[in-house]
Length: 137
Length: 68
Image (cartoon, rainbow over all chains, first blue to last red; front, side, top):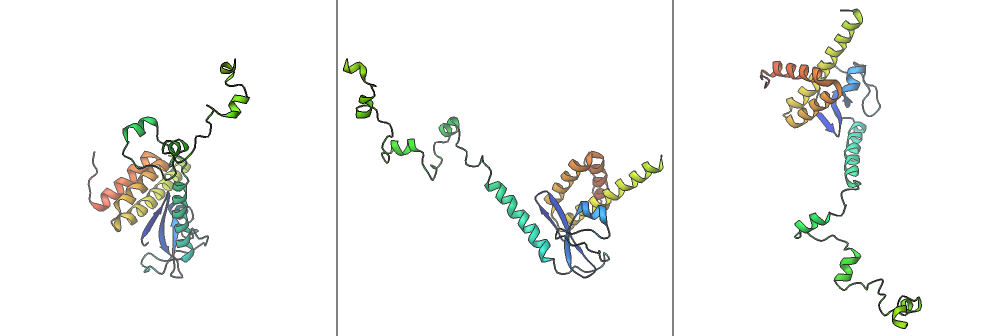
């Protein structure tokens, strides 16, 4: 048994097969199918005696574990709550936090970088629809 | 104890031994946090009794008394 790795909730250890290649095997698989467990790469291996020195690691097992690590990162990146807008209380109490990369339309209007989309006061369209009927009468 | 019960007991003993070997694989390289995570995972999968038995095996093997 050689160095062990932990990837998310998948606990594996590197076990040496009789052909002197180290494969990653889960504890469940090791318990159920010893001495011929199925490695995470899909290969069914025959375990070498414990006194056998570790060999080179199976590239497919290593790639599988690496892929699981990146998948876990992807789940973290896709977390919908990560970019959730903070609550008004949080914004009030943490006023020194940096502004978001993309400001909200309200922030753009406040800074004068965007015209207000609905400026009904004095608009000809508003007058023609009768919104200012009280002033016409 | 029935034969079936004895077989189940033996299976649990074998399972505890596998968990012990995996935990010791972490501890043998000094990766205590991973061993702790693994034992928590064992507890969630197999229950408190299995967890305590693995801890007992580690305690005996490493000559480290368990905290009460």
